[in-house]
Image (tube, rainbow, N blue to C red):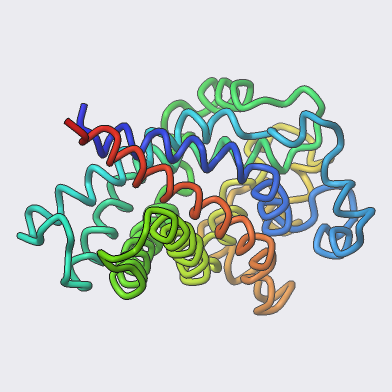
Length: 298
């Protein structure tokens, strides 16, 4: 396998391990009301409410299994597709055309949908659940048993759009900052610090550009799944009363959320997501750059 594959895989897994606790908060904020009649956005505003999102120590890694396995593969596919697309566009390894960078990033994001759609679905459902024994594996088995592979790709359309747009801006912003802020005269320490800064800011730019799409995706993927089950508990509360057990599409979810909660709902969780994005992507880019240098050293 190529160096960019392994560099992407390891950096993706490292980012998930670091960012999962904050990602859990972000997902619960986006999903809305997840337990009874308690409004998550209000509850998390207090220290007690913030701590309350972590029912036990295991909650810190809830939903992390699927992303650690899946996001490593996703990141590997993303970086390989990005680099190969740049080569097809006849841009060198140090690209200078930012339009080509965006196109290559969007192509990589679109390709990563194959992994990201089922990974996101499993992760989000694990994170919004408050059941003690829930796991990524049990959710996967349940979806597969009831809906087959098609069920794992529910919400795939909005996921692919989110990924294409987001990763276009991800690579574009990182390369723009890196090329403008670094120079050949920088020491190793300066280069490392600038890579961390560029990676972290690129993560914030990315999430700011797609956050409304991510909110819709989360709500699409965490709807009640089976009409035969009673609509109670945290999963039942995610389903709007008027849907009567039927799952809504992305546009219907967006309209319903806007009518019920206003435009602010599409940016709920952006603050915690920005903190997570900076930390995760700073580490992710640093690990990727280090792995590339290590694997390409003769």
